[in-house]
Image 1 (cartoon, rainbow, N blue to C red):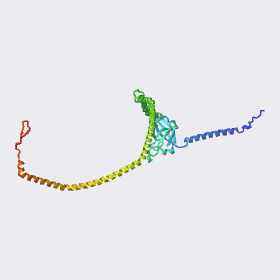
Image 2 (image 1 turned 180 degrees about the horizontal axis):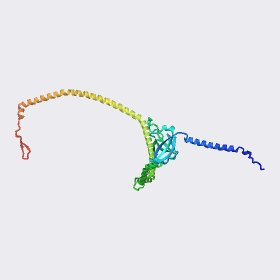
Image 3 (image 1 turned 90 degrees about the vertical axis):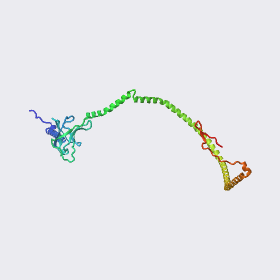
Length: 334
């Protein structure tokens, strides 16, 4: 009779251990699934809202929806409609009160190569009269310019500048352009720079020689001036003494001239005071002489010898006209 099979003692309770391992694994996987679901908002109430877009390039299902930069939901689904593509946004119900009516959605990208998200821009409703959006309500979608559009705009702005640069380069390449003429003039000027430098060096050397010669001449002149100054300093006291003597002599001569002038003035005054009397006496003498001469003419011998003057008159017609038209004086009738 064969011996009975006996299990090894090292495998005792292996079934319970395997069962416990599988149960633990299943519980771990369930916990992970529940945690991920919780993180994805599976246990949070959501409110669906919609927007219509002409296309959904860059929009994917499950994309995050943000409000003021904070995640408040995700893209739940997309469906084609008569207005393009109808996109469903699943928003956490706790944040739906922060989205007023008149808000709009916009596709934005974090940087140029970052992840794309749906950004909800709240409408301007300061008094909150319109109220928050309701479930299944449609909001407006504003599509942002993508990188290609930005590059197109940049190209449109930069193209005129490149055209201007190309035109400027073409103008520079023309032989008769102002740039070529300026470069030719600059080249000619640069070619003349060595000669100009040599002339400047020569001019500086001549100026240095002239300054040295002027310095020597100035030294000689200053020496002469010093000698003249010394001589003048020596002769100045003598000249000052002579000048003082001359001034004293001139002062004495002026005093003498003043005294003589005073004396001559007194004499002239006396003469002038006697002139009227002399004139009166001369007049008397003249009248006496006239009386004597008149009396002498009346004396007999002298009266016959002296012819008495007779009164004569001129004829009325004293002038006659000559044939030439000039007046001719008529001869006087005695």
